[in-house]
Length: 88
Image: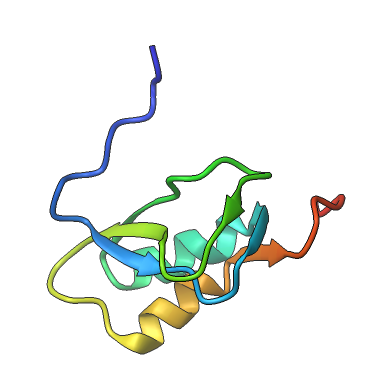
């Protein structure tokens, strides 16, 4: 069984802006951006998955709608590239 809980149905999607392969997540930056704003963030894709523009990159649960500055801060913690390279 998968130990990761499913995000709530009302989680707000943060869409992919730049399609490519999900190469990594800066966990410290993501945690800081989320904690500073009282958010819980779900990363619905495994590292190495190809993500397409417009689809959910992240799913966010928190108080109210997420503003564009917060979306940008969350997206900045996710590394997307054109090929499956050795980002660590």
